[in-house]
Image (tube, rainbow, N blue to C red; front, side):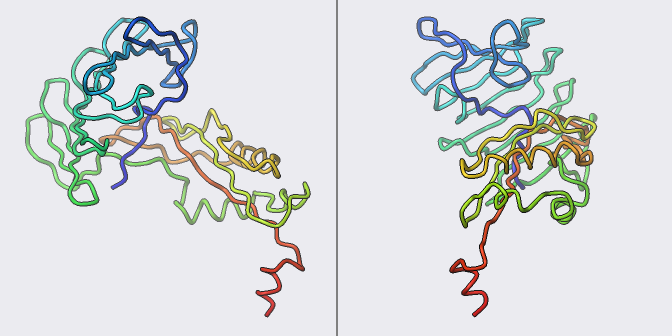
Length: 257
């Protein structure tokens, strides 16, 4: 099972804050780095013998939101244990990582402190175990479910074929080749998309990025991601590729032969 990246993700980019002796403070707005004035949380990161230890707090209440160790100051590589707390203060999840930041186990808790569910690495996939509030194991549970386009991969392909202008790269004069566009967006708890932005696009076809954004904006709502059956905000990354192939290109000639 693929581990989800559900706005509880740890990856951050540039340090958008200030350093203070042996610690750094980073400000966030819904897990995206921002300035102090627009932040709803902040993280205090301190250097230690193992790497960096991070504690993130709510700007509104001052409560601890998460804490744990990282191998890097950008908080992209967690190690050992990492804890996330509910806004009311109780432990929500406990994750365990090895030295290479591979997640070995993730445990969700009820407000009463009892285990709710657990993902454990077994070989190359994660097993799923769930319990009710009385502590009785339940069968057939799916703990983390990714957001997806209606109809899955088949539905996504058909949607692109019907709505994407596949000639964009050729129309702007891009030479023969393939032009991938990586785009990031959020799927909220009802499946609506927001914060759509292009992460990478070829300089030969900047219009390709605009076309992917346009199509996503006009598309249908997605099926929302869930954790323990409850909808959650999901951060997604998709790649769409455009191709230019003229009639006299080598590939075209080989195909004709």
